[in-house]
Image 1 (cartoon, rainbow, N blue to C red):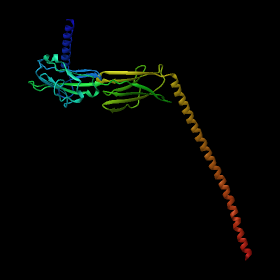
Image 2 (image 1 turned 60 degrees about the horizontal axis):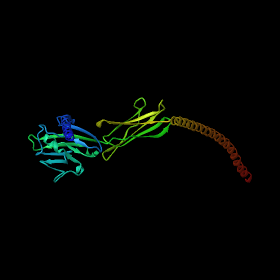
Image 3 (image 1 turned 120 degrees about the horizontal axis):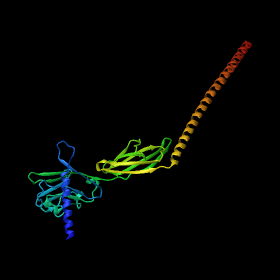
Length: 306
């Protein structure tokens, strides 16, 4: 007896839940467009798409049709026959995953449940009563979220600081990433790298951090569309920042050494050129004197032969 009463209470609660959802509608942004109910769920969970006729009349003998993105056949009910108990043209994506609440049909409730949701289930759904007078259509926007798990790695150590990288894979909807310090302040970062594959998003964000009192840094991931926020922290050891200092000293010493070497080479080159010039000039003068003597000798020989 108690179990039967509990079941009835649950049915009534479910009915009012669907009623509230069907009445709480938001416009989809199109001017003068139809009202749209937005439904959010995480991937792998079951979801109820609400639909209830305006006058709450019994629809057990009526026809209603569920479609996705105006084309895909999600579920069809026609006076007791439906995709789960008769001939069907149901899209392969939804076969064996969609059902209705038979006991709620007499209350005008044509809601369906989609089990084990996938990201590809996201889209615009229509619950259509084509034979009612006037016809009634209800619009539902389903967003199946794939909540990301951010991964943080130390990418590099430079004289500017420690380079941190935050990676999110296979997320939906597209998330936004931010780096924060222990005070909650947003840190400057490189341009976000975003790629899309299979309807999901891979996002990478890098930042360079310097020593702080806590050395604790946070990568925050937001999916505003489904109200999901997740973050990961990393605490860096002091030695990493000492390595940054050492790297800076090493690079500074290396640069100074290169400059000194360049100066020495320049001095040696200049001195060498001057020495060669002096020697060349002296050699030229001596060669000039020798040529005069050699030229005179044949002249004297010629006079003597005469």
